[in-house]
Image (tube, rainbow, N blue to C red; front, side, top):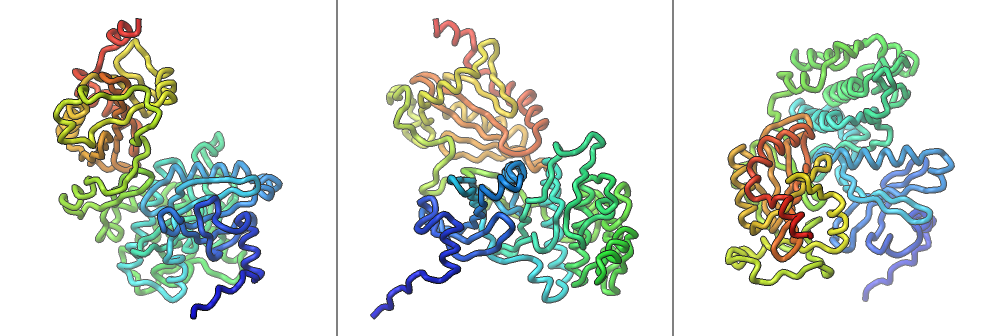
Length: 483
């Protein structure tokens, strides 16, 4: 005979229900479980998404405390930062939701706990420490390239996933380049004492990137030694050591490692190692492999340079039950598409049939059409009209990609072009969506999904526009057809 479930009477259970806004499923989707951690105005729980059966971490913030404490701008900045820094070694923000009393961050659940827990058991093997440090620098480099400075890097904010890979978390004290004063420096005193850079202690302004590099140096020392480089029971004495850069490497540190640490923990920020210099360091480079990734349907897909071409091509194949952000069929399409419009290639490739546009889409597009030119450009997005069938457009894009050694990923009428050239902001990735405007006209929308904006602009002007020129429907025809 099965035992009846015990009634939920514990004080902890009652508090949990109160924190997440009552009983039952949170927002009709999440079965909330145990408390993972708590702060002054936020608590983090593990939860199960009942739609996908996947575990997530939910950060529940109290609106009243945020407003009364004057933290509204702080929370908005944290959300903007987390959306800006999507990377395989950074904890991912999936979505933000709110009720009258709460704000909820739905985030990636990282099961392995803090890196601090591993270090607390003793120093790590050199190859293990190097691997974590490589992943940390990869993530920090990505942040800096996007104008984001963490400012509170420490082992407690570095989590480990099921694969033993590192995930940077807690961007609550992060700053963005826009916060710099007229002197080009940040001035907020923040960070954890043992990991804070000497120029922050001096309170004369500091470079956020240099401060993060210092913290990375302290972390590397801790991973390899098992203790802090500037540790002292007196915080005043510890600050004095930090300010002077007074530390000694243990005898088991190799010469290359010792040299790197002295570059990282240089009290002069001007001569301190930069991220590119770290990545060229002999100790760092041993076994280092660039992580490459792309984001599709709000999911991150990553692979490294050692992956075979076959493995990469397999990732291009459609998977069952996948949905795409801009590729869903609409029940309120403006124009149905008779079979006569599609040539025989659609019979062999039905997935190439483009989704129809809704009336809302047409309205949002119409304000952007500039009939004086072939292309309508809005920042990092370009649109044009074409009367060519979708297979012809896709074939053109494949030819362009092949000519510049880009990889092509296809999912129905959605195409992704991915560059091979590495940069601080990762490889250039361009998404192309094809929409049905009328039975004989499609809209092709090109936008940057990842990578450097200047590189995207150069690609559009020098490669994409010339390559697609002959399939673009000229604006003069549009004007005549609308009379």
